[in-house]
Amino acid sequence: MSRSVQAGSTPNRLRQLRAFCHAAQTGSISKAAERLSVSQPSVSLLIKALEQDLNVLLFERRGPRIELTAAGQVLLDTALPLVEGMDHLSEVFAARLGQVGHGSLDVAAGESTILYLLPDYVRRFSEQFPQVRLKLHNVTGRDGLKMLRAGEVDFAIGSMIDVPHDITYQPIFTFDPMLIAAPDHPLAKKKKVTLKDVAACGLILPPRHLSTWRIMDIVFHQHGLNYRVVLEAGGWEVIKKFVEMGLGVSIVTSICLEGDENLATIPLNEYFPQRSYGVVMRKGKFLSPQACSFLELMDPEFSRCARERQARGPVVERQAEAEVGSFDFTGHDRSLS
Image (cartoon, rainbow, N blue to C red):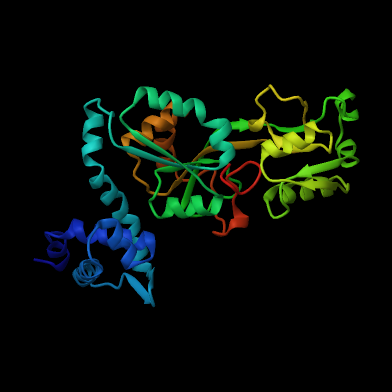
């Protein structure tokens, strides 16, 4: 019997792969042991046995941290969907029987997404599946991606500009760029507002390190204009409040406008791009029945589109360095808003 057949028949293979996947996701033997509720030596032995069975080195040990080798990355890409599928077997079986009434669902999103976009879907999902434990994780873009890669959440909802190579992004919604001003502001009375008009006003923007500044720089400089920021403030609700007070104007994404604000709103599609919001997932991630049910509430075509995406490969994605400056979960800043 060949070595590959012998390795495939190892009785502990699932335990070995589960230990390996958790160690790879967390970058730590001790954290993998905590997840699995076993001892660190047990995890180490399982991984060592797996390496011996496959005759490869899966991790490079660097003190308390471990990093995947090239072979380890290939195995993770192959094994993780299988392990996640086995871990959700009972839920998938229940779903095939038409029963998605139990289990859990973890979703990462930024404060603005949770505040403006998700409430109706959370209500509908909770009414339809009252026994499913739903947890919303209010996180920044950096932390959201860490949670996705570590398998701590099923998916994230937000907006992405550049997509890292190990992440998929499926847009669902599109929102317009809007100028907001106090009702008695001079721009509120103009029939047509130009970018030059906006540049002449004091702007209220989120903190400088967030991506809004990069977008402002690009657009204003493309038109040969300088702009002036009179106030930096964090959060759309805070910015809207100061704009209402007449301290300046701002450029926001229409997701944050609910229609009851005491503000003049002016579309700026002529100058600024629209912003999409959608589903952010780790490539190869197994989606539980609970996750699929929630996403199908947001987009009834989600399952079909996901299958087509898998069949034709990535379309909207492009390679990007995995650093905070490369992606944007917010449509406004880097906070998975």
